[in-house]
Amino acid sequence: MRTSLSAIALSVLVGGFVQAQEGVDFSGRWILESSSASTETPRALSVRQSLATTNVRGEAMKPFFKDITIEREVEGSTRAEAHQIGVAGGVVEGTSGSGTLGRSWGRHEAVEWDAKTLVFVSGSYTGERPEAGVWSERREEWSLDAGGRLHVTITTRGSSDAPRTVAAVYQRE
Image (tube, rainbow, N blue to C red; front, top):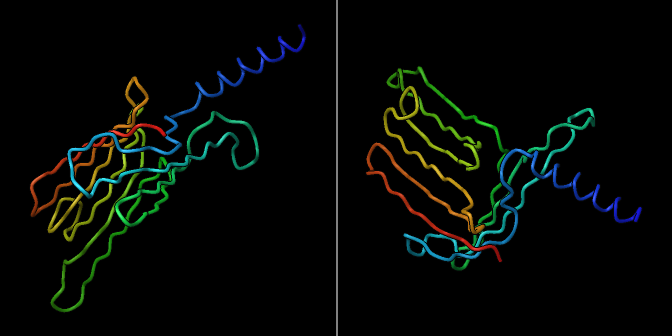
């Protein structure tokens, strides 16, 4: 009886811990089920997310997913990438030499939660700010449906390109 109560208490604690975390756990291997694109859509994704449960002093805190590593398998190759979740940043560089006064370029990227959707944004531009001069942007959104399938929607747009959206659905292996 005592062992059963301990197991129940542990289940309640673990269940509460998982429910209290911020974000969705996309960890696992995902196999492409359907896509609106052709060969450019990865056939499989391998995803790992790290869950932070303590702060820098080792004290307990509300759990959150701090980073995500993605391996995208396309025909003949695998591309790996890693992102910090909740971090936005970029680079802006300008010049003021003869003949280049006012020219600048920049890059930006962010990986953030929008409710239960993980959003990756990256872009570049040659003007004074994003969407100025020659620019491009890529927005990738990840979410799970009620059946546990992963929906990935990628929208690309730019100063010289019409917006394009590709949607893919993956099933956990």
